[in-house]
Amino acid sequence: MSCQISRPKIVKIQGDRIYINAGYQQGVRNGDQLRLWHKSQFIDSLGIYRNAQTQSFATLEVKTVSSRSAELTLIESEFLPSLQIGDFLTKQIPH
Image (cartoon, rainbow, N blue to C red; front, side):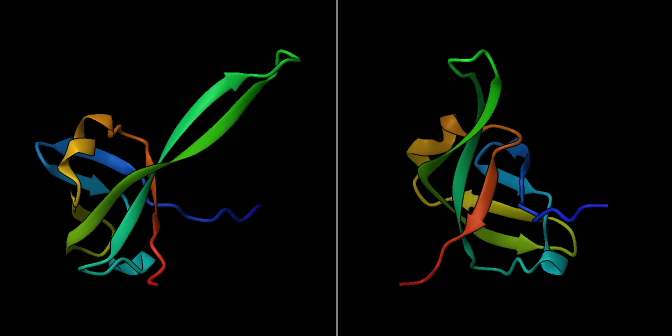
């Protein structure tokens, strides 16, 4: 059995509301700001499929939290069209 770090993923987008598969039990709190990451795949020069993760400039804020899910909104609404189911999020570290 291996351990994997849990990263919240977007599971639903409804208008300007974004839902993730992590909540209070995973440490998500109202007001948290999360950074968006896009997942993609590519074929390298040897013909091997590789996974890539690209950090977006989009920041989302947690509005409502339940035990295992949360509702977020985008701070910068111009990034809404780039959101995809399966994109993942990380907590922003305060400066």
